[in-house]
Image (cartoon, rainbow, N blue to C red; front, side, top):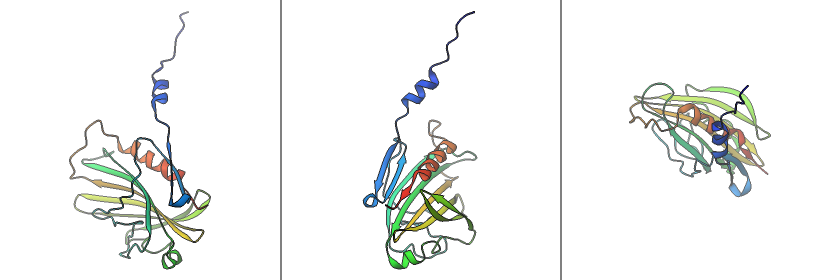
Length: 194
């Protein structure tokens, strides 16, 4: 009976994947891991249907004083339809007393939003909301999470932003499912506080 050898391609693919990196921000109060293929940024600019700033606001309330700590974003080919989708996760914080007092509610629930069950993340309980909006050729859906830890309001926004009228990305661009999984893995790794 001939000896059969398992193909080495899957093992080589695993060995070639770069190790995840660690991000530490806000003076050591924020820790997370992210794929080496992504770059952390402090660009908290907005888009059509999406407010700018350290946290998203869905009810017209100002985002309030705070600091954007980190944002990760990656464009991808949409799972369905035409155009382009951007998957992103961002984290910001504020120590302003007025912001901290209403951390879990201000701006967190839009007209078409929905309150979700609280979530545990990094050992802390986060209030969570599902929000979204749509325009002529743009659509946004987001899970928005808020918590207060050691006197600071933290905001995490996990966003999918689609533009159907955008030029299609090349076939070599990552697909939406893989890109969303990368952002979800970053989200799951977030730890705040001391």
